[in-house]
Amino acid sequence: MSYFVALPCMLAVYFYARSLELPGSYFATVCLLLTVIVAASGSIVPGVDAIVAACLTMGILNAANWYVDQQLTKELDAGLVELAPPPPVNPFCSTQSHDFALAPADCDFVIEKINAEDWPAVQRIVNGFSAVERQGFYANLNYGSICPLAALNFVNSAAQCSDAHILFGHVKLCLAKEMGLVPGVMPDEEAAAAVALAFKHFRSALRQDGDDVEALCGLILAKGFIALNGEHIESTLQKLLALDPLHFHGLIAAGRFLIRSPAGANDFVSMVETCVKDSEVTLAVARLLAHVECASLRAGGATDSRVIADHYAQLKIYKKDYQSLGAWQQGIASNVIAYAFEMIGDNEEKTRQLSGLNGVVSPYPWKQKRAVNEAVLGVMAG
Image 1 (cartoon, rainbow, N blue to C red):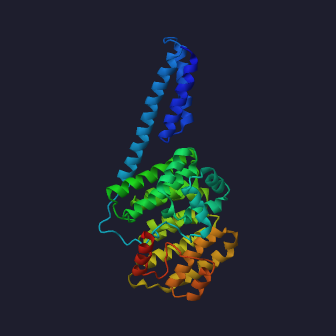
Image 2: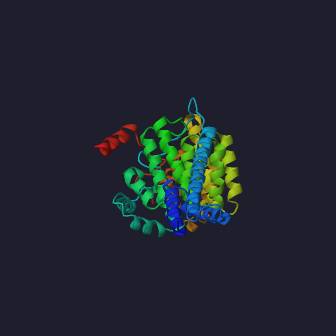
Image 3: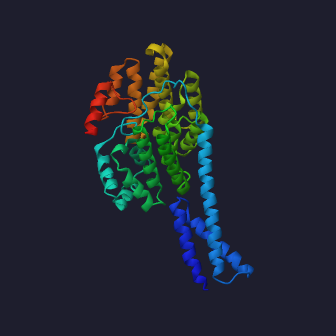
């Protein structure tokens, strides 16, 4: 047999590895190395050694896939806790997406490209984003309008593209919410399966680039939704802020999950301070977020004078550096700040912060009543 048989063997290994969402090039290289090692032994007919090496590599590949799934299951089982009764958890998401500023109309054309399965156009658009724009894109995209099958086809056609995995991970989180997933409450089997898929794809994106901040932010959201212990979220947030101290999307997502008490708020702020020593604007947003979350836990919503004074002190720090932020970051921060000042009764400052935001803000929807939400849902369903 000819050694040319090694080429189809390596291709088979490569495509099989990609179908399992493992790095195909790594296993193709392993197949080549095993072929050389077996051939060097001289104990097998030339050509057959390539087939033997491919079989061995397939065994290694399946073992690696089993290990990845076991580690994910182990992490979920170790961290998953049933909270009974559920602690007070704020409305973390809007109905359709989990945005933190607003969902602008200029994102609609990207959704149209995704649903039309125009992958080259989608990749050109996303690759053209700056880091700040990419953060805003994932923070604000209306995942409820994306066809899940189209998102899956994106992953299958561009398995090496981290953005395809991140997008699909968010779509699965959105689907889990439609199945009734509530932050802080044990998910049912169907919702848990959707979140497990989201985990898998955020991790697939990190295998492409271990420093992808949007994949890390996705992990924070997935971990928070299934009530993983705080340590799991904190470790991911620390890595995220080390890579991007101005990643407000991840900061606020983690804060909403971690802050369950005044002591938890202090721990959160201390952790952020350690991670972003040179970014006062980030620390100011973290402190304002801590005040907002703690106020939501207090009976009657009373706020003492020290907290009110610190609100204005943090706003002063924010205003000093806010011009260095991108438009997306300013929108996210303005949303939180506006909510903070509504809570202390400063409607003038609240209006000022909201003046640059168009549309519905989330996760702090202003005075939306249950009946209004149900009416909107009815229109969407129709």
